[in-house]
Length: 416
Image 1 (cartoon, rainbow, N blue to C red):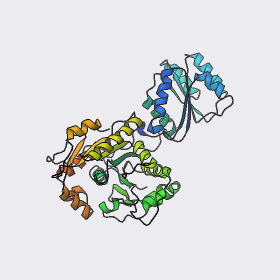
Image 2: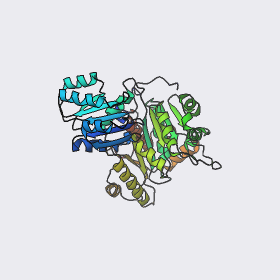
Image 3: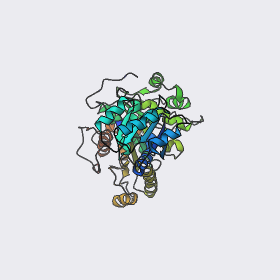
Image 4: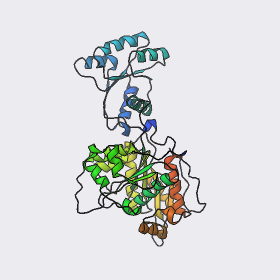
């Protein structure tokens, strides 16, 4: 795809090396020590290894030699050794007799021996790692083996989801992405996965078309050329992938198609914002859990509290090596509406919100009805400034223009 020149803020923005997912490969690991086996089993549950087939078992190098005497070797073989120096070389010479040439090999040892490392790499071993293993470092190492130093960077994916319907998650997703593109000058794409009722086209006053529906119907055809044709360009740095929002069409989409579309978009665009509808299905759960960043939008009511806690519980269990999602409270302070006190809400779900946006029906209503962004209607409003800061937080960049007015909470933790 053609790109606008990168700005100073854009720099090398995109997924960090530890965020790059591992491709669809088979990985077998033969361990000598329980702590190594436990570390690799924890790594196998990580979202970045969700596409790979991982099998971890005891046995070490000798176990691998015995096993592969009658079985084909996987794409990646991880073997742990108790030996040192020349004894390691002797073990690996036995392994070489049963190992396919195309198989990459990682050796795990207990000694930090530079000379051994050099000898192993000279003999074709892909990497030598010293136990105890850190799961994230292990995943990053695997990703580096298959991406390589010259691999093209991939975009960073942020998913917005609402704790309940009508909470304004889509509006905040669209406005946050707009700030990233317009004020940080980072190439950004918004994907609207609410095929029947999506509002991306309306909020930007653009014809929705059939782009995302066509991409989901045949994801295997979605290359850079087709993606460039399907995306709607909205300014030099922002692209839209709106939903058709038609009710006279059946959307029979394979669950894997959503993942394929996101992967293709992030291969071309540094910042990808996914507007996830308020549904809970295998594809939406996977999209949420696979994201580099998650933003949960809630209100100070009981339904939001229950649902936000449920989402957080799932995310915490399935993403043990990632930071907590960002929690945004929207529509705070609606007149005459009873609200759960913010302190009680945070205590019940076990997390402080990073941002509280005030109820501002005039601003949000005018922006929605006119197909404009909040900053285009009221650039100095408290809600506008809050979304501006959220855009800076999810990108780790600073947006200098900021109103001193506002009634939102400061960010609790640093971005990144």
